[in-house]
Image 1 (tube, rainbow, N blue to C red):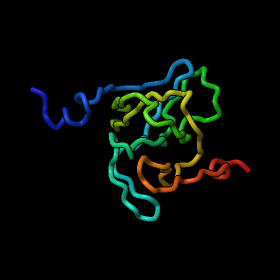
Image 2 (cartoon, helix red, strand yellow):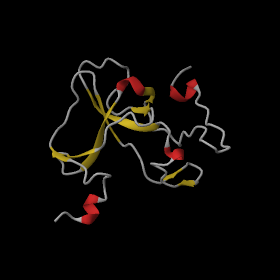
Image 3 (cartoon, rainbow, N blue to C red):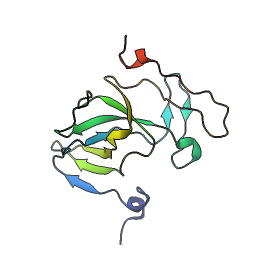
Image 4 (cartoon, rainbow, N blue to C red):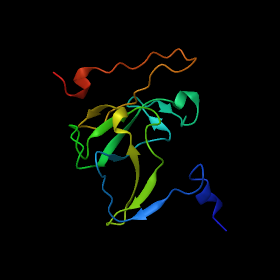
Length: 146
């Protein structure tokens, strides 16, 4: 009989697991470090997990884990990309050669909005349905433009 705690980790059961190396094929992008839980802003404001609710619908930052050999976009492995909401696969847990685990997702490359060489410092939340919260404004300088 499956462990109830394991079944509750994913909406339809435990997340698939794989042991070993993974690399993207063709023009695909595989990413990790996509956060879905509670978040704390740089000013100390705690934003609770809102995934699955209207206010949880916003683009998310993630880090490029690997990209396929046909992908000629300027971001590289280790760069941070902002992806339109929901344009990623369900997570797969990979046990790496050093024994550590990482959760990866395939990203829809047509829905990558922007990239950054450094991890973004704060959340980027836009106008939410029914809320009177002004959107955060992204400037070209935030992404390395002069």
